[in-house]
Image 1 (cartoon, rainbow, N blue to C red):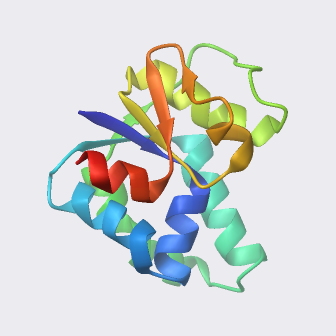
Image 2: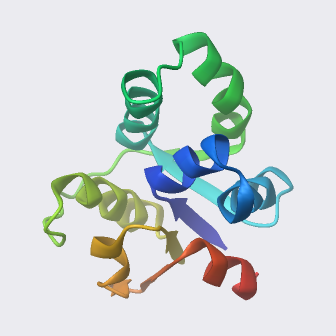
Length: 130
C-alpha cells in the first residue's frame, strides 16, 4: 500500500506526537510505502524553520530517516482540485505515486473524500485501516 502524508501530519508528528507520530512510525516500520515529493519535503522544512523556529540541522535530524525510506516522485501533472493551492501539491504527489491513501488533518483535503482512486483520510482513520 502506497501512502502520501500531508505536511500537517509530519508537522504534528514532530511537534505534538500522538496519532500523527504513530502514522509516521508505521512507515518507518515498513507497514506501508511512504511516497513524497520535493515540494512536500520543502514545505515541511519551511514550516518547521519559519513557524516553529527549528534550525535546518534539527529538521534534518528529525526527517532524514523518514526521507531515506520514502519513495520520491516528481509529479508531472498539475492539479487544481483543492481551493487551497498548497493542498494541490499533496494531490499531485498522490497521483504521480499511484497512492492508495492520502493522510491529512486538513479539512480542505478531507472534504474531497477521494481524488481519483485515492482515498483521503484522517490520521486516526488511517491507523484503524492499517
